[in-house]
Length: 287
Ligand code: PAF
Image (cartoon, rainbow, N blue to C red; front, side, top):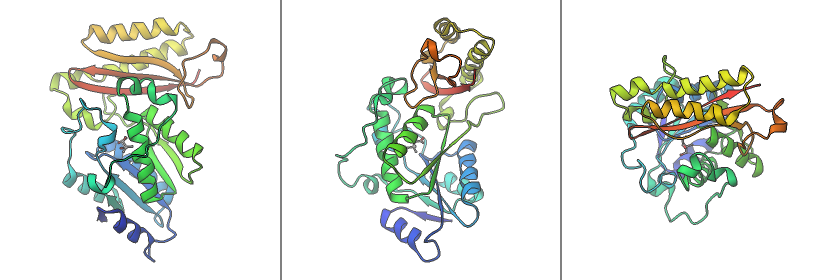
């Protein structure tokens, strides 16, 4: 496995005679790897085969953090990450530092459409501009044939899939199912912020999503009251919900129009704070 820190070394490596022409499966991450990331590596490897290269980037992207968010305390566990990548069969870790990624102030940015201002984007202004901009830069650096993202970050997946399509980028975006702990909690790098008591409570977000799904499958269509009931239950248990909402599985994650009910695949999206930790999760539903 090669560990590369600069764009020029990455390009030289990927274009070397032994690597040129090999399909590249790319897994962009911010490090602090868990089983969810390793699953993305497995999917990338499955797709490119042993003849391809699996490249993982590890870069904590300041541009996608708000001024009051956890950029400084975001867990950085590079030595552990390297070991996990080695065991998972990653071929190349690309780990640029901030100066390599942003050698000058990033004047050009990717400004996503309206979806960047709703849900997580409403709570984290500028977040998706930062994500789209760094992913565009990473795609230009790595030039992968395919890239794998986890569906836990559902809004991010939608937005990046649309970006690649609308900019005609020759990259296949593969969306991987969320990996969960045995009690249902979606794996996330931020779970380590949870206290023991909070960790016990944390699966209740998934319980709330499952309850909404059960109501929908049972035929309830009073979306507002279903959402309010679930929100209320979490609030009573001490959560501070940012949103819990039923949306269309569309590029813009719109609310459901009443005439779309029979056909539209839906997704239930939730973001709630438990103490100081913000957890997000989602569940797709086919009515
Ligand atoms: O999902 C993440 O870990 C990040 O948003 C990403 C895609 C690596 C961009 O920094």
